Image (cartoon, rainbow, N blue to C red; front, side):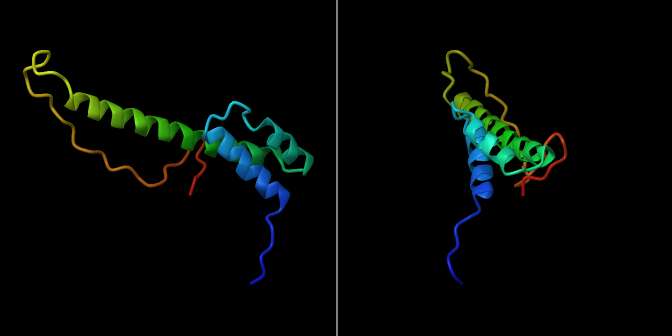
Length: 105
């Protein structure tokens, strides 16, 4: 199988999604303009942005939950002598759909 470079529209789409998911300060606006220049439909761009935002938000929620769980473990006894109830871990699907119903898998 010969190596072939990715089409520039695919590179722009991946880069835009990564910029959004990473909260990059440049926001991926350059890639957005490239995608529009390639004639990528707005509904396809919207779907990709929706998925990238969903992954970003899900990652933030997971980080926040992990912080909250770990922070409870280091509460000084003098402040909270009663044991802190620990909730059962919630099983999370490897991929949840976005609020708009788009699958990120």
